[in-house]
Length: 326
Image: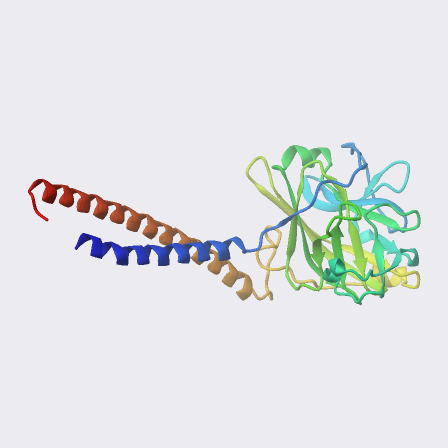
């Protein structure tokens, strides 16, 4: 009888094992912040703690520019680090226009590796390149402000919250001509898109705009601090793409880009934002995690019971044998 009972337990164990594996696979597919690849080679730089913040409207059309976190009056924020001149300065994104000239026009290659751009092969797009070009702005990011490096825990998260413009924006990394592109931000996807950048990082990427015109790009920078607190700030980058795009129009442009629930800075009211999708996703992940744990515990219990049943059967067999029973 003991051997007869072992068979259904084996089937039950198999069912639970498969269910646990399925739950864990779905759980592992839940979205996590991407991790930006290693910093672009030959980007050694250091930033002095006393580099000034310059006020006034400025258009940057060529040269080295980064976005990055910095403290202003003891408040965490996101600024533009302007390295286009001999003495680098920090600038307010509200007063800074990033000009992408017609010199940035390139043809989309006929290569399936670039299908993520969502643009037909042969079409002309504006590309701010990962490797510096003489007549095009060179845009990246850094986490190298001295106070930022002293206060953040391991790194920051840079999140694309939304884009307003006549076309789409895609930001991606590519390590050499033969490496696969690594998409970081795609404005065609209507969701918050985070990626992780480690402390003391200086990286440049490819920024692809599909049409000329004014683009407003809402970016959040957030971090866990070494003192246990959290820091977060959301700013809007301003682009004028194409030589014919008016700088005055770009400075005058405004956009109410909704901040997804769970991505807003501390104290920001997410009113008007539909949080059902994000809330459902959180509940789903929580439920799957709980299901996986329960199934795993059930599997352990069944395995222990099966082991105990086998031991009892073995003892009964030994006893029966010693007593001369068949």
